[in-house]
Image 1 (cartoon, rainbow, N blue to C red):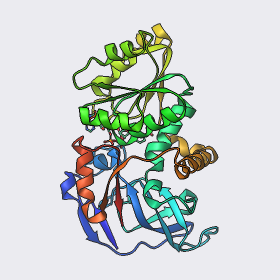
Image 2: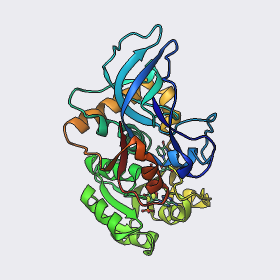
Image 3: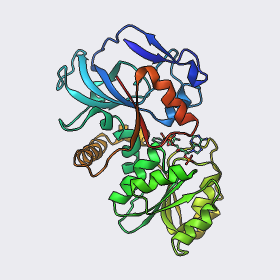
Length: 324
Ligand SMILES: NC(=O)c1ccc[n+]([C@@H]2O[C@H](COP(=O)([O-])OP(=O)(O)OC[C@H]3O[C@@H](n4cnc5c(N)ncnc54)[C@H](OP(=O)(O)O)[C@@H]3O)[C@@H](O)[C@H]2O)c1
């Protein structure tokens, strides 16, 4: 089979599509033929050795994918070859075949295509977990989404609208903001040159936002936090800008703000049933059209490097999916 291999940590363009032996399932494992894999910002970091996980070399990046069951290891029950499934892994999804523990597989409904299924976990799963489980977002509240045209951000915009919030989408260019409007954002802010705090305040009549969803971090974090309403919630999702913000904690005290860490990958192993129920709900919403993943580009595995470079260069909007 072919896999997009990282032979040494370094620039994305050093990844090579390489012929490797087919993986063999061990006890309790399943081999899945990958049909579609969603790209995510951590894929760009892990190959550069800049992520919290450093896999043994060589390895293929890629953390979420959908496909068909190909082979079962000893002791695996409940699946047969050909079954349509979705799964996530720490790395390895950018390959024609992916080895996963059987208990990580989620069966796909017949009417859910591989391509949207491949982006349901990292973006929508994180969005649902962050906004609902961790953030307690309620209908009628104001939600500010940073990096709102990105993969995680665009899903949060869509989910925020679906949950009945008023969504203020923040991004770095007119094109990205137009994309956010298309997703349903009620208002937009170009934080590349507008004063983020003042604009949020102005758009909320001075009251401030109820919830901030932040996958970007860097210099935008503190102004966004300062623009929260009393008892607002700040959802820490990620640090795509690179810098990990240092927040003066008196800000949390003065307005009784909650700063809430959101880490789906760390929560899921301890809440398997709740996670499975959340994913079932997202799959139902996707099948019924209530959410429509903003997949702006599909590329074959042989061109996955192009997709990763778009993410790393901040040029992507919505989700990019790699197909086999
Ligand atoms: N906590 C969790 O469970 C969880 C789950 C999944 C992902 N994440 C994290 O969420 C973050 C976003 O992931 P993603 O897949 O949505 O990425 P993405 O599609 O690339 O979106 C990230 C956005 O961040 C903004 N950005 C600001 N500075 C940037 C820079 N120097 N380079 C790249 N983008 C920059 C960009 O928007 P503008 O140009 O508009 O600023 C971009 O659209 C990552 O940090 C990821 O690790 C966390």
